[in-house]
Image (cartoon, rainbow, N blue to C red):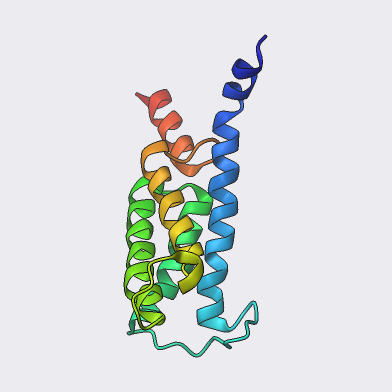
Length: 143
């Protein structure tokens, strides 16, 4: 067996690991906003539910949970990619005053990475170990 064939066999599992690790990292941004956990230098917690920050926290926690479980992966990933694009262009770029679009200079590296990982999941799907996959295989069995 050649090396490429071996790697291809594990592709769905590698995709699942990317989805799960991304979701866990993403969710911490929401829990930090909502509960101040994990603690950050800027504080956190005490957010206003009906604000942009409140909406971001809810999307990060519950959208991240859906991605973690692989539940409605493609539509949720699409929404989260949009959220991260918004965060980059309307939060990080203006932060530096002069509209600096270089992610390392405006602190938007994670927003860019999350945006493109979520966009990738829109097209690639959830990979292995997902509720979406379990529901899909169950519907094939009952059909």
